[in-house]
Length: 492
Length: 125
Image (cartoon, rainbow over all chains, first blue to last red):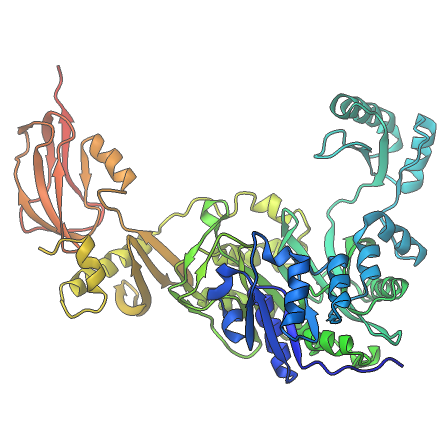
C-alpha cells in the first residue's frame, strides 16, 4: 500500500473562479494555498484569498511549464493543482511537477497522454468495449467496399474528405440509394479543395445531446462514477448551461453509460477526477473524449451527490483511498449551472471589459456563486470572458429552472455587460424548459444571441426619472461624487 | 452605487443606480441596464439628426433661452436655443442656412427626453 502524504501547502496554477474554488478547498482541509499568478490577475479574489502569491512573468505565464513547476517548488508547496484549461491536461507539465519532487493533483502523465490523443483514446475505448462512433478509414476506396461499409455503419452516413476540414468535401448519405451520388459529389469537392479524393465514412448523428459522466479513481484500483451531467447548450463548442442529472436518459441508458465510463477509467488506470464525454442520439451513446481534469461544471455534480470533488481530488492525490464507495453515492434533486460571461448579448456576444462598480449575488439556500472578481476589480481582455458561475439546486428540474431564473434576475452587476439576459431567454425557451434541447440549440434559435437591445417605454421612463434625480443631486455641492463631475460639466 | 426611488403607473420602488462617465447603470425588473447618456461629443445619432435639422431633447431638462421664431430665416452656426440638462448648458446650432419650420417651446419650459425642440429646413435655391 502506498504511503499517504500529508500536504501542508498547495500551489494553485490557475486563475479566476477555479483558483478561488481550489483555495477554498485547501483552507477547508487545513492546508495553505500559494497562488502562482500573472500581473493582470493581482486585482482578483484569488489573489486576496491565497495565503501567499508568486508573480509569474512572460507573455503567457499560465502556460509556462518550467516557470510554474519551479515556482511551485520554490514556494515550498507539496503539490500542484492545475485547475482546468491552461496546463491541466498537459502531460509534460505533470511530469515536470513530479520531476521537481512535488505531487501533481491529477492522473498519471501516461493517462493524460493516452486520452489526449484522439486516435489512441478511441483504440483504448474500443478495447474497453466503450461504444465509439462507428466509421471506416480504410485504404480500399472502391464503390462496392465503401457502400458495404456504409451499410455496416448504418444510414445516415457522413462522407468526409480524408484530407478535409471546414465542412468542405462533406456529404450526408441518407440511404443506399443516394450513396453513389453523394460519394461522387464528396470526392469531386474533396479533389478540388484538397487535391485528394480519398474519403472517410462515419455514422451521421443527428439531434445529439452532450452527456458526460463524472468518474473518480484512486491508487488502489477503486473506480466510481458520480452520475452524469448534460451540457447540450453550447455555442461553438463552448458550454453555456450545464445540469445534473440529464433530463434525457432513461434508467437503463444511465446504467449502461455509467458502466462504460467506469470501464474507460479502469482501462487507463485513472487516478483522480475525470470526465468521460458522450454524444447521445435517442438512447444510443458514443464516446467523444475523456477530460483528464476537473470540469468547469463540477458544482452540479457536487450539488446532486453532496460530495466535494476538489477536496476528494486532493485526498486521492495524497494517497488516501476514495472516501466513498459506489454504493454510497446517490443523486438527489436537480442542479443547473449557468456560466456568467462578461460579454454583450445585444451585440452578438462581444467581450465586455472594465471595472466592476457593483456586484450583488442573491445568496440563499440551494444557490451557489463561484466568481472571480469583487466590486472594484477590473475584467481585462487578457483571458477567457467567463467571470463566474451561478449554480442552483432544487427538488426537481422544473423548480431548478424557476430558481435559476429568479437568481439570474436578482443578480446585479454594473460596470461590465454580462450574458444574464441571454441565460434567462435560454432557460425560458420551450426546448430548454422541456429538456429536449440538442447541441444545435443555440445555433438554431439564438445564432445572433439576443439581437439589438430595444428599450421599452417603461425603461425610458425610469431613465428619465433617474436623470432628473441625479441632476438635482449634482446641484448639492456636498455630494461626494461631485468632484469628478465638476471637471467635465460646467455648473450653471 | 446608490438606490433611487422611481414611480411608474403601477409601481413605486427603489432601484440600485450607478453613474460612471456617460453611462448610467441600473437594475430594473430583473435586468441590468446600461444607458448611454448622449452628449454633444459622442451622440452619433444626435449629430446625424442635427445634420438634418432636427433637434430633440437628449436629456430631460429645461429650456433656458429661445433665439428664433417659427418661420424665421437662419444662418449656419446660428444658435437657435439653449437648454439646460444635468446642470449643463446645451446650445443648438443650425447646421446649415435655412428656415425654422417647427418650434414647440419657449424659455422656462420643462422638456422630456426625446421631445422635439426645434426643426429647421434647408433654404431652397
